[in-house]
Amino acid sequence: MDRPIGVIDSGVGGLTVALELMRQLPREKLIYLGDTKRCPYGPRTKEEVQQFTWEMVNFLLEKEIKLLVIACNTATAYTIDDLKDKLNIPVIGVINPGARAAIKATNNQEIGIIGTEGTVKSGAYPEALKRINPELHVQALACPLFVPLVERGVFSGEEARTVVQTTLEPLVEDNVMDTLILGCTHYPLLKPLIQDVVGNKVAVISSSEETARETSAILEIKHLHNKSGVQQVHEIYSTGDMELFNCIATKIFQSGIQQQFKIKRAVIEKD
Amino acid sequence: MDRPIGVIDSGVGGLTVALELMRQLPREKLIYLGDTKRCPYGPRTKEEVQQFTWEMVNFLLEKEIKLLVIACNTATAYTIDDLKDKLNIPVIGVINPGARAAIKATNNQEIGIIGTEGTVKSGAYPEALKRINPELHVQALACPLFVPLVERGVFSGEEARTVVQTTLEPLVEDNVMDTLILGCTHYPLLKPLIQDVVGNKVAVISSSEETARETSAILEIKHLHNKSGVQQVHEIYSTGDMELFNCIATKIFQSGIQQQFKIKRAVIEKD
Image (cartoon, rainbow over all chains, first blue to last red; front, side, top):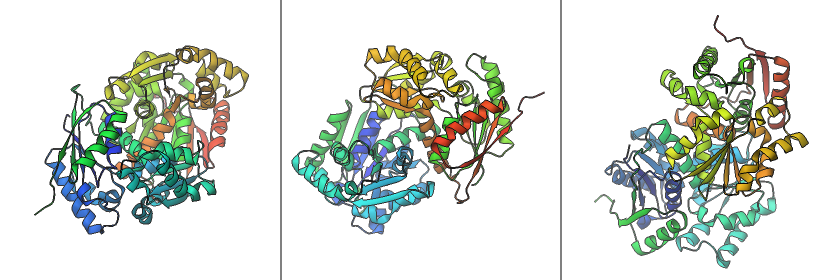
């Protein structure tokens, strides 16, 4: 089955999911679409997010994707049920894989979650966690300064450290969680800093890595793995400013894989 | 969907998978069957393993399980395709979940696998790994002394340390792997010792934990999660000696969960 896997996100954060898919599934071809022009989705209405997400999905369906990954927490929260209902290909969001990995990792049932204000307000992670284990204690913290950092390409250095340290202070002071979910696809780019601030005793769960791992499981169950040995050239699309997108995508991919990709502009809005 | 999850193994090793299922899916009821009377399966013929496995499966099907976990490497290698083909419930083995977790964990593409002689000879793990990523380097080591230790209930102490240290010497001396798969469901009981011997820089992957995590994902995809909040009493069956089985099961479960279970004798052989 050599049809591509489709990945959508409101912007650049989902590239961390794409990177993990490339790393964990090197035989698969990806088509990524980041709606950078209308990013961020966080402050938008549910209806807007649903409309934009469907526009992205339709763009990818024309490219005959065999599976869809929603690499964006806001879009997952607002659209996954509808997409699962209406599409005849498997649909994977970022929330449940992260929740399952945290349940596996925790020993003391104390789980922390960091995400955007929208994700924290939605309560999607606590809900996903407690649906599986009602006994868990869950503490969520919004980190509104992390996404702007990453979108500027700042993943390390003094500024990043200060922002991460100051933001995470409440969780660190509390000192009860043994597991922390990175509930935003931008955050894995700050993972070394975050791990350093929370300390080595806390398991830091990247929902990007976990989503890629679960995609691999679903490809197997549905017999969708690509069996040909051909080296793939991934297609990466952005709806907005190409220069910054190009720069961040190259920065993310260069660190982790030796695969080829082409970055192009996409127009997906309906007239 | 409050029907139980069925778990089969040749003996006590699969109890580590059961423990992880209880820990990661506390709302689910388990029915476990260990064929201790005819354990180990490793040296038996393919036909014998297939016949014994089907006898176990038929015992559990009568109990209306909604999903089957084959918590035994040998049985997975010899029967999973046939079971997937013929049963109309999801079937999960231990090999692919462990392989996927290792692919996620490795940074240098150097993966070690330890298992019984049968599992190592079967080549099932290298095959599962390379099907997903042909570039991986895989080194497998048989550890024939580990299962007898665990079956005697020896999980720590000087004797266990000496056996683990001596057996793993070739992998440790080689010093290239950054990820080690515990390719036998008995080995998670020796995990603290194994981690200590290989060092903290090596990610030690328990196929038991990973299998439970993937079971959770599949329950979700198939809409099979138990949504009732009722506390479950698990049923644990053994075909052989009840005293030792009882003792090991209690030892394994007491360390990790606060759930109720009943241990009973089962007769599954056809006349």
